[in-house]
Length: 288
Image 1: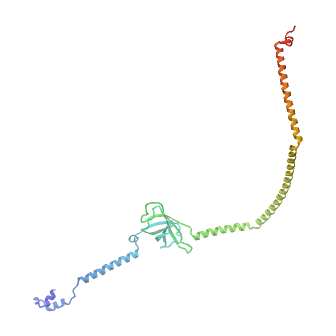
Image 2 (image 1 turned 120 degrees about the horizontal axis):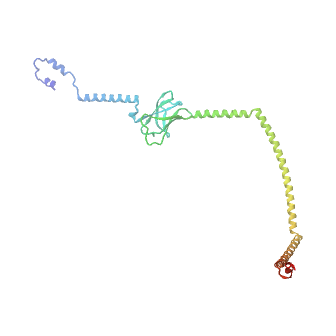
């Protein structure tokens, strides 16, 4: 504004030359709008640098993640970036390893939205026939979630190739036993046993035939005996003999009753004689 007033016709100050005022009028003036634009671009550059640092360093705390650690004897081909699953859902990834004398320490980065129970454990298993490993989180029953940097127990499960190796070992064992069974001495022993078994079966068949014949004869004899007993029980002679036996039994009963009466009378007479009653009593008691 001062320069414009001077340009409008104000007299120059004493001791000043007109050339200095012309030089100052040629210098461009700073505007507030340009300063705002420069500040905006500087701020945008700072944000870009911070974003690049975040992407390069990959800090989990700025992205809602936390770390857990486990240790196994053998990682089984696990690689950095392999998925971490819980109940079949990807809940994190493998960040890195540390090989120690006791085994392999595995560092895993977990999503914050999937809490893991504090008493959970880690199991490494095969991802399929095409290879690869999966870190499986076996959740526990605790109500508390693991904290950042928690150490969980880990183990390595047998994969498909381990199962195939076990099957191959069992197959070799079976083949070895089959080879032993096909040994000439074993075959000869089996042949001899078969011949002995055939001979024994023949003897048993002959014995069964003989026993069947004897049983048939015994059945015929029992049948004839039963027929004889039945005929004897149905003949009239047997009925007459039974009637005769009944008559004899009746006569015996009568004789027994008569003998009982005679015995009673004799006992009465003997009693009177002992007491000296009657003629026989006096004869037996009186000597004169």
